[in-house]
Length: 241
Image (cartoon, rainbow, N blue to C red; front, side):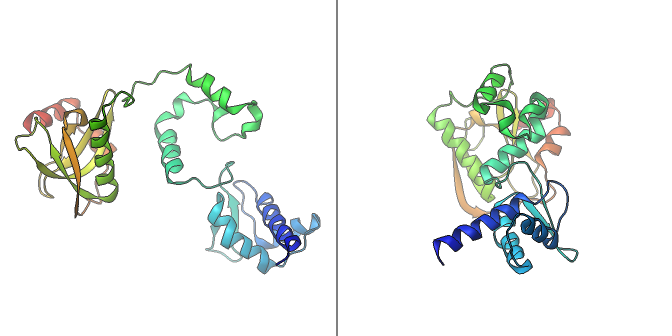
């Protein structure tokens, strides 16, 4: 393939993306007509290949294949899909922090407010959010947090050491992580028939991910669990360990 044909193909792909509307469905025929009006002639087969093999995979475009012809639409002003870290950050922001972010910083093109980094920095200077700050944590505490994250993510058993525990080392099934203002709580159980317990991460001296996996309870949701258990219950759970 020559450089000219490569550039033309890339141009056709990007123009196809540009003509996909935000939150409104379109199809290959409509996109073909839009391209033709811009002087780009492509077959419906080529356009569908652009859509299915590249655009839907790389960009924030979804396909409704339940009808014929297939329908396409953009789902975000952000063109590129988020990577896993960005996806988690975006979901946490939407669920817990929307109340502290103005519309000007949510889902709008960055060009409308000049230098976005300066605007974001200025806005952060106007906020105070009382959540756990791990910037001053020791290396040992960061190690514990990393092990807890890994065990939760891969659904592996976790071996804990803590002066709070009556056993020197205890193997547990990690179920969740609760952010309670000034601390992080690990939600866990010792077996699939035991009650759920909680332990503040700063009280854990050491933690290591096991190679053993466990069956994570499909009906458990950390947010629902914490919402139905008061601070008093969590304190009692800690005291009973």
